[in-house]
Image 1: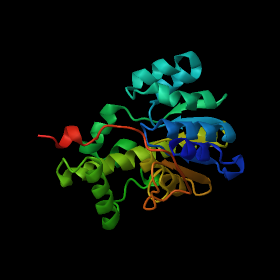
Image 2 (image 1 turned 30 degrees about the vertical axis):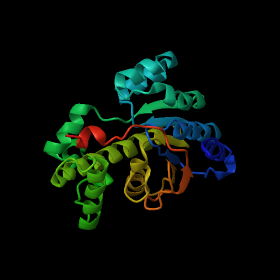
Image 3 (image 1 turned 135 degrees about the horizontal axis):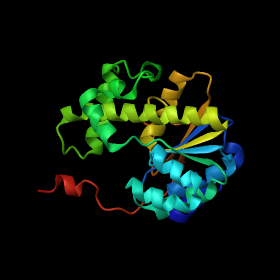
Image 4 (image 1 turned 60 degrees about the vertical axis):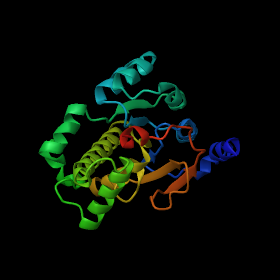
Length: 250
């Protein structure tokens, strides 16, 4: 079953790829098959640049200038698991490597200063100067609460939603800058939560640059009917320990 599902993902025709300026490739971070699917998509897409959630601008510049330094730059990011991401870099061809990860100290400042203040003068362009509708705020806090195994006070999730909005805007800005610098198409490698079309990177791009076209593909382990993407590709679930065990055990 696992092999069959993976072969179905990899066998999708290139014609399934849309003509879009920016293609966002979502992922389950620890799923090797999701990364193989992303790599296959990149080979068909032949992007001018690939924007990575995992690398800072400095780390990406190092890797872009000397491709022998990709693994070292990845190690410096602290992300880990480079072997399962290596197929993505192998599939990129001559595409430029762009980093969009915010430094950890910047993320911490979002909690104290707010996303708009930290983002800068373009905050309004990406919608960071406005509060979310209450229904969306509550829905996003609930998702964060569940993602953190209901092990933290619900009220703390408001700060995490702010961080998520900030990171989505940073990724969107990096993708738009790459598009302007290198031309279409640009690919973005990020978690499925960032790839969703209703409030993730595609929505930020649509607000900031309405004429830019996007297409989001979610590489998911099950049919995520509640998460909107332009396209869903189901991959076999990864084998992993219970992620909540360390947070909920006494």
